[in-house]
Image (spheres, rainbow, N blue to C red):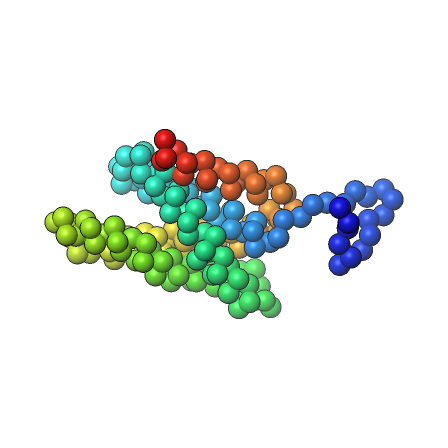
Length: 171
């Protein structure tokens, strides 16, 4: 495999390092952070553990799609911003984008529950939970992405954990 010509050649005592794209590393960190938030929600609300694979499945669906779009947009907006300001912008984008995406994904489920007699505020509640979860994931992904990009095995393990938890729901 040929070495890319975009960087300097490694010196004699140096071994070339493999680096994951920062966006991919940030998405993996965000996905695990979102899964951890869902575990916290489940513990605080008393939800059954069987809901965790469902939450992980939604994370597996959402992060590569909406999360990648928001990550790309956030990186464009915060190109010259400080780390703190960039993390705040990513958090705001995650909150708004997650709430919109959560109302889209959760809207169908909440609509089914509403027609079965649940309260009408269920869509708003699910959108808020997804928005806050996405905001936390976006902030954590932004803050840890550059560091995680230098650790490709870590990025793969983080992604595999979320996929494995989602796959538990299929069993």
